[in-house]
Image (cartoon, rainbow, N blue to C red; front, top):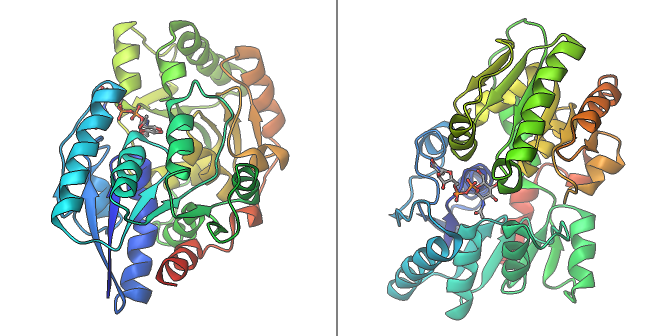
Length: 354
Ligand code: UD1
């Protein structure tokens, strides 16, 4: 029996970890046992707790309760907490997901103790080192033992950085596993006019008043131009910023709500005609659900979605956002074969066990 420690901390990681936990439970429970460590990076029920219940993820064995803070301090607290747990227990490997500070801390703590690190969603690059996530990805990849790439582009990035096929493995994307699994479990959709689903949470959008204002103005313009409603679930970081600038939506057709759960997000996606976001996860979920996506960033790691014509980079530029929406209105993208076969979690576990 092998024992692995799964390290999570931020919302997108709970979602990815669900796919792996289910595959362990359903396919490998006789040979693999998992403990979950939650760093506490996200702590509000809306950002953390309810994902465990809704997605049926085992409750964390450890919770470091680190909370929010500047990058260095937040990462340092995690590193020290994870190290102590790894020193006092025997794990055969550590699983980390994506590119948050929790990912970085988990990979570093384990690598320093010569414990194999398995990185899920490896090889993504925006080639923009101003993003904290880009630093986290690079360092995590270069301290990992097995690197599970969700796409061939990610594989190529890893090859370019010197990884061979023994270490870098194309697994497909666990988020496709999830969308396929959960979409069939949603209640039938309520019949109402399709709307735009919009989210903003990246620091370069929320922490720049100019960019944030341009995006918020574009929301008002989209309502007028396309005679549409907009559902705008607001991340806590964004909530602080828009409250402090006194933002009130131009029209009641822009509905600002608390962050949605995973199933609520899929449901909203299904009822939308367009997605507007700076989130990486939502870009993919939009593609998997056949919705066009306006990306509120100058670049993306998920280039295959842009190349497929299913998403358009519009940065924080009002005109480009409107133009992208007009172009995407009549496309209905699908066939996400570049993201694997929907069985990425099992592929990953088989490689780890080997
Ligand atoms: C983090 C990840 C980002 C990921 C995002 C998903 C890093 C560097 N960034 O960004 O890659 O896309 O998670 O959401 O790890 N806050 C709350 N309640 C919470 C959590 C956060 O109010 O439960 C507020 C705090 O004011 C905090 C701010 O949100 O300072 C930012 O939280 P933080 O975890 O530092 O980064 P995210 O922006 O969520």
